[in-house]
Length: 197
Image (cartoon, rainbow, N blue to C red; front, side):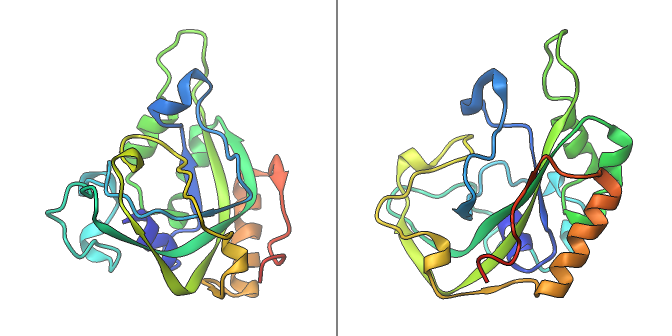
């Protein structure tokens, strides 16, 4: 659902606390470019805000996860533009227009660490999404499953080397970046949003 929301321009940010494979350090945006792998893991409708009224619903809501050998279509890739480390809940609440997760889900991610010496927080990334002219087809493997953030897909050129079109044009994307900066301040990481288009 989230990949579809990004693909259709309904969502422009990623909010991450990290999967269990990231360990105590949590999630890190390790790549400037990455394909969006449309997993179904953790995609229960209850975690999404207004999912019943959007067009970002999966075609087969009964499917809980892919099976080995299933064909997976990768239709878009992301360029990492800006990254923020957010530790103010009031700021995070203002980000609702930019994502489809429920407030309860984001609050759970914000408070995810139960360690007494850790502070609540979440990482936010603004990503620019590009839709591939020709989707890539891969065969799902058991190693692709589970709660993880990054998969290594062998034999694929980077997204920017594929024929693609931006989901949001330059003007619309610049407006999103401006609004996020007004809400969250200057990012800790900044790339050129026009370098891949």
